[in-house]
Length: 243
Image (cartoon, rainbow, N blue to C red; front, side):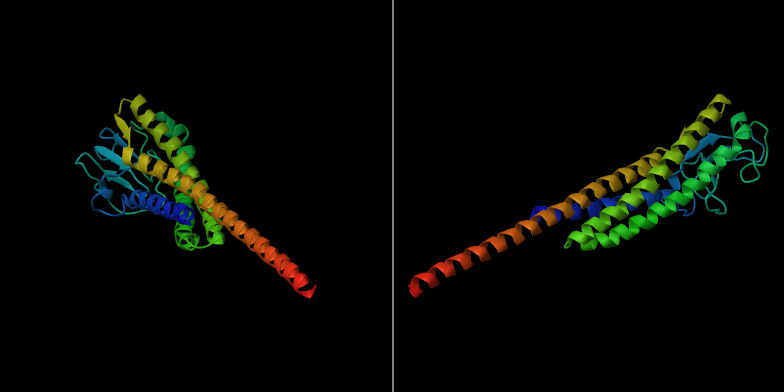
């Protein structure tokens, strides 16, 4: 019994851990406080681009000024895109890497849709966190939580994949243009770690549900067998007394 209850408990901890990692990255750029003011997806040296800060950092919400060890951010805009040449970022093509200009739609849609997929993953992850409490004591709760974390895992995978495709390519574009750039190790690490947490919790929720189902079937079979044995014994005794 203790071993069966351990699977949903570990799954619940993993879901909570994955959500925490996602919330930390989601708050970066929107909240000015440690530790989230050190998280970003991409940092590039943009001092030679008119209207851009010396060091620019992209988050879910805006472009922040870097170079001081923390983000210094302005107004907040949901689903802020990586689109340096457009009015959404720097509104100029001067010294902007050419790939951003030729394929601005690719970067725009990748970074916009990743925000939407992140919100969907958060929603199903939070739902799984609550249903995970039921998984501690019921088989149905384990399977339901496994389904919800599987959905959260799917959308988090899309989010992480789009983030990687857009910002790694963006980093390479800046470097080819002679501008130093790095990806945010915390943002990338936390996003992919959250995906791993959802994957492991999905597996463990399903294992926990299967273990409870197997235990229930064993108890049911044993109960029927013992009742049948008692019935045969009573029949034999009654027959002996009757004779």
